[in-house]
Structure formats: structure tokens, C-alpha cells
Image (cartoon, rainbow, N blue to C red; front, side, top):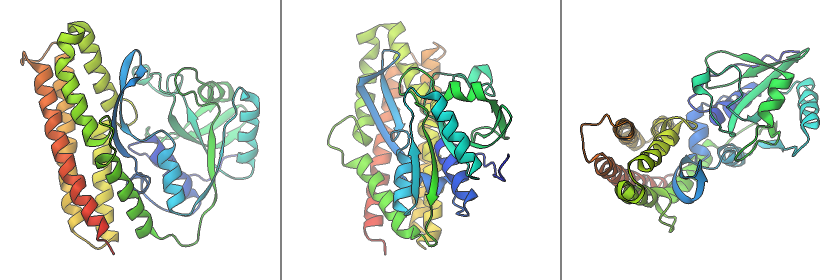
Amino acid sequence: MKLDYKHIPSGHCENGVIAGLLNYHGLKLNEALIFGIGSGLFFAHMPFIKIDSIAATSFRTIPGMIFAKAAKRMGIKMKKQTFRKQPKRAMDELDKTLNKGLPVGVQAGAFHLTYFPPAYRFHFNAHNLTVYGKEGDTYFISDPVIEYPTTLTYDELKRVRYAKGAFPPNGKMYYPISIPEEIDLKSAIKKGIKQTTKYMLDIPVPLFGVKGIRYLAKSMKKWPEKFGPKKASSHLAQVVRMLEEIGTGGAGFRFIYAAFLQEVAIIMENDDYNELSREMTDIGDMWRDFSSMAAKTCKGRSADKDGYNTAANLLLEIADREEQLFTKLKKLIKNAK
């Protein structure tokens, strides 16, 4: 049994899976709209959460949050299930749902995905993919971060659904069960933007939003003296890894949000959002410049002997640009009709 499911390559797995599932049920929204309505854009630098003994840096909200918020704001009801320490039951429930003619989104660990090239496998347990059929021992897989549909065996799929380590998937699966005939996109967009501007501007703790970017920058300047060359390099490399490899990262999410603002300009009939889209694209380019600069510093290939300070100063510029942009966006959406 193989469902007539359209594979939609996307910039980010969670957005892509949601877009594909909704498309199957007749609601055609691109990943940029889903990302913006679901308030996916974020920043956090959290010394109290460690990944490989180094502080975590995040450029997005908690995995699953984009999906949950976008669905709620559009009035879509979802079925979500986890099966802690019950792999057989998780696979049986997946089979039952497929037999009902419903494709299913699942959370998976990326390290053991056999269709990923070895260089792209890493211990990240919040990857998302869609299962849209099964024949014998083989499952049909739509993973939005690869170009074409693929397959996994029963054992391979079970293994990635029960990957071990931080934030284990525990067999999580999800799919739409009810979609309204009419959706108030303007209302959903307003709620999504208001939440994002609050994330980036109004959280009082200085670890989040633009305050968090500044906190990271100031901390970064101290790393060489505080940790020594080798460990400081590991801390900087961790930021680059979170920016470029885990999910879509900082720059990629900024480009997706820029595309969202272009969609908003059309839906809200206001060209001011296009101007903000262009500004967000410029900010995304700055994040890419930071990645390149930081990577060279990590590898000792930078001609700049003061690479940590230079990279940190660029972060401070980015924080200023993002603060200006989200302040404009907050005012614009407040006055939106």
C-alpha cells in the first residue's frame, strides 16, 4: 500500500513535513507560511543546557512547537502520540494509521538514517519525516531535506524512532484529523508575528532573543582567556554547528522568515512587509558571514589574530539589526487591519 503523497523538498524538516501532510489533505501552504504562523524564529544561548558538555545555542523554538502553534492558529486538529519504551506498539499504530489512508509524520534520530550520506549523520533526535506507505517490510519515506522520496526497512525505521541520547523521539508520530473548510490566514499570521516579536524583543531573561545574541557575543570575547585555545575553539565550533548543521540554523531560518514576510505582503496587501523581507535577507547574509568567520577561527585559518573579538562584534551588529527589524515588525502588525 502506497499513498498518493506528494514529496515536497523543503529547507527545514518540521516545516516540510507539515506542508506535505496538509497538502495531502487539500490545504496548500508553503513552508515559509507555516514557519511564520508557527513562530519558528527564535534565539537562545543557554549555558545551563549542555550538548557534548558545551552550552546550547538555538535558533528556533522547541521541536514540535512550530507544528503545534501553526495548527492551533489555523484551527487544525492533530493527533499526536508517543510510545515510551513501546517500539512494537509504536510500529503497529503506525501501520494501522497508514492502512486508514493517512500519511504520518514521525520524529526520528538522524544518526542512523541509512539514506543520509555518512558525513551528514549526527546525533540529533528531533528530525522529522513522513511515512506514506508500506509494502512487506519496507516503508515509503518522504524526508523533506532530501531531493527524492526514499525507503526504510521495518528495523531501520524502528531504530530511528527509538534513537537514544538527548531528547529521544520515543516513537512520536502525528497527523491531521480535522482541517476547517475556511482558514483565516490573516488572523493566524498576526498571531504568529506577534509571538515572534515577543520572543525576540520582550523576554526579560538576557539569554533569549536579541538580548541572547548580545549575551553570546560578550561571552565569546572571554572564551580564549577563560577556556584556553583548544576548548575555546570547541565552544565556537558548537555555535557554528548549531547555526549551520542542526536543523536549518540561524541564517537559513532568517531566509525562510524573509520568504514568509513576502507572503505576508501579498496576503495583508502591504508592501512594507517586502521591505522588512529585504532587511531580513541582509541579516541572514550577516549570519552566514559570521559562520564563515567563526569556522576559519576554529580551524586556525583566519588571518585575523583577534578572531573571537571580530566574530563577537559582528554578532553585536546582528543583534542591533534584528532589534530594529523586529521593532518595526511589532509596530506594523499592531496596526494591521
